Length: 168
Image 1 (cartoon, rainbow, N blue to C red):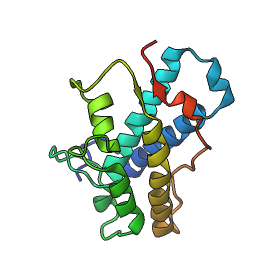
Image 2 (spheres, rainbow, N blue to C red):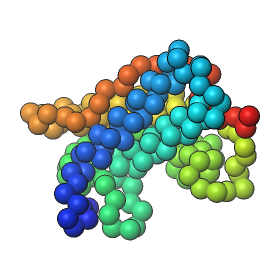
Image 3 (tube, rainbow, N blue to C red):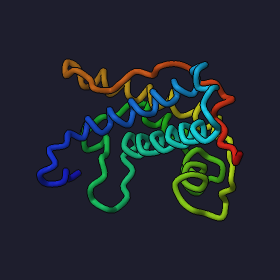
């Protein structure tokens, strides 16, 4: 992994940011107050949670875009192996497996494809991935001790009624 020259960016700060955003947005989705938000805002929160999940999974699974500057767990913690990473890999699936979380996030959010519509229910994705991501983050934290972890903790359960992006 090459960090852009002069950026001074600690890749762990980026991992922590993505985790903070994912878990914070998932907590917001489960917050009773979120029911007062307009459908537009609820859609934006759901889509943002999905994008942060996708980015975080890419880093934790050491996925390589081929551009040479990807943050990959395999480079942050060389030799780190844990079953939680493989469990996340299985839970996420791949881009060729239709309706896997990976396929859904790629086809329905990240890329303008003909598979997209004006609405999609992301409940299954947002219920499946955060727990697996949290497990990997916990193992990373255990592995990195005594270095204080920057990775945040999930803030709570989501209300599944707010996991659907609708066209209204």
